[in-house]
Image (tube, rainbow, N blue to C red; front, side, top):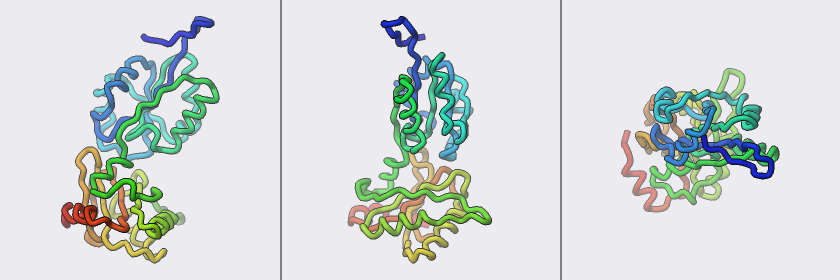
Length: 251
C-alpha cells in the first residue's frame, strides 16, 4: 500500500480520510475511491440521515467491508486513534463537513497532528436548488426533532419566524426516523403556536436520487413519501422562483 514516509525518522505516517458520499449510491468520487483502496479500516456514520439505499449495496460499490458507527462512537472520536497504526476512513452521507460533528474530528486531527484529507461531495444544502429557489436567499437552517410523549421541542419554528422577518427561505431538516405524517403534524402545531402563516410549503424527497419536489398547502400534502425528506418554508419569492414553484408537482 502507498504510505507517506517521514524522512527524518523513517516512520510511516498514516492518514484519516473524511469522505462525503454524495446523495446517491454512485456519487462517491473516483478520487475518494482511490483513497479507500489504501485504507485498512472503513467506518460509516449512520445517524444523521435515512439512507436512500441499502448499505450492502454501498459495500459493493467500494468493494470493501464497512463498519457502521452511531452518534456516540463518532462523537467520542476514539476511532481516530487507530491512525497510529493504519489508514482509516469515515464515510458520511452527503458532504463530509455538512454536519457540525465532523469539523470536531478535523480539530482533533490538528491538535494531535493526525494527517487527514477531506473529500467533499453534493449535499442537501445545494440540492435544494432543485426547487427553483435561489440559494443565496436562504436564511438559517432549522432541524426538526422527533417529538416524544413528554418532549415536544418546537424552537425550530423560531428560526422560521426570524428568517421570514428578513424574507429569507428556511430549510428544515427532519430528524432521522420521523415519518412524514408526524412531521407535518409537528410543523402545523408549531406554526400555530408561533403565529407563523405557512401558506404553501415545499416538500423534498430523495434529492439527488429521485428528486421528488412538491409545492402545496400542508393539508394537501401526501401522508407518506420516501426518505430522506425535508421541508422548505419559502419567503419573499422572486417572480422566477414563484414561476418555478408553480410548475412543480401538483397534489
